[in-house]
Length: 180
Image 1 (cartoon, rainbow, N blue to C red):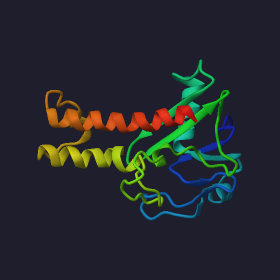
Image 2 (cartoon, rainbow, N blue to C red):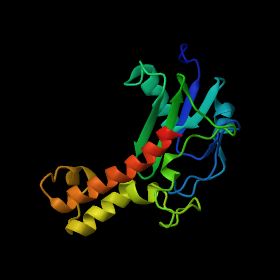
Image 3 (tube, rainbow, N blue to C red):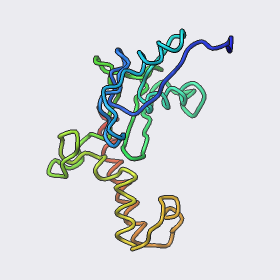
């Protein structure tokens, strides 16, 4: 009944078909795949509905209201169960010709590395995602703690080594992205 609604925005993990409003096949997303979110919402609401990758949406929020508000070009990096990203170029969030978001998490940092679910070898996501790092931290310290608790262990050499390695891996991918 709100009169000031201009539209509905949906931000979700990818990959997505933003043109047709479909969540394709995100990994580790409870088996959800090929869901037409836009079609579902249009049945219930008469507003314009927009779908985009969660990292693109976060980058847009930073461009409009945050640290990117005075920047025309920047890379947004989101680190969680995966490693997502978005590119803002000339003040606009970048989508490729198929409407897909940038996926820095799937840049290979080790061509002989682990097989990723995407089919590539050595993807950044296989080395620096939060669940990968948390698993490494638990094994190295033999402690069952959450990510935030490990971040507070500033004097533990094993923890420091793992975080430094994570930063180095992310740096390799970011430098490659900036150079592209």
